[in-house]
Length: 182
Image 1 (cartoon, rainbow, N blue to C red):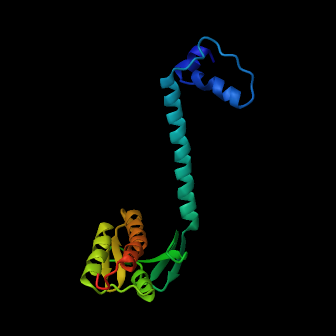
Image 2 (cartoon, rainbow, N blue to C red):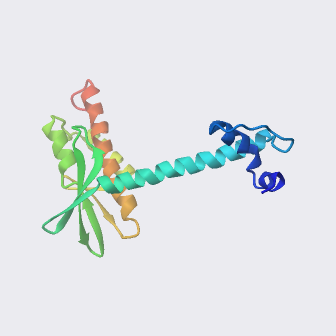
Image 3 (tube, rainbow, N blue to C red):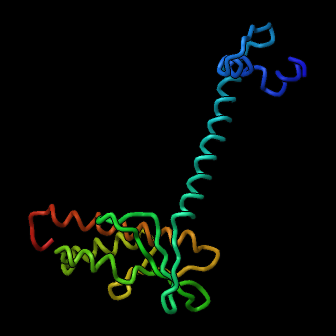
């Protein structure tokens, strides 16, 4: 390989840095000087590759930490995400009308009520519905639910988990307000 070819590939500009970093003696020649633009472009390529490998590792972690268990007609999905008690968030899935019904089985609202949070005032109901609507999920009785297709399952599962995390955060505002009827 010639310096001209290496330079054309964008590699000559980083050769000196690599050699220095790995303990090799290196004496730059006239073709070994990289412009600021070349160095910036190289750093951007390396940074994207590094971050992509971190994203890939996150996908592996998420898959490894998600546990499925069949319970009657449902599949319990234990996620690696933690609720306000540091318990793993669990959702339930089953086939329904050609798609998948995902639900928290009432856990989120029951947990709030058990903790003393009342959701019976119109303002609190409106805040709850606004939060749920923001994630595209619905309330069915006390259950937070969403319907998914095989094509949008990942997004809809994510929306349900996000809603389950957000509702207690919104409800925590109720404890800070001075008016008992808010």
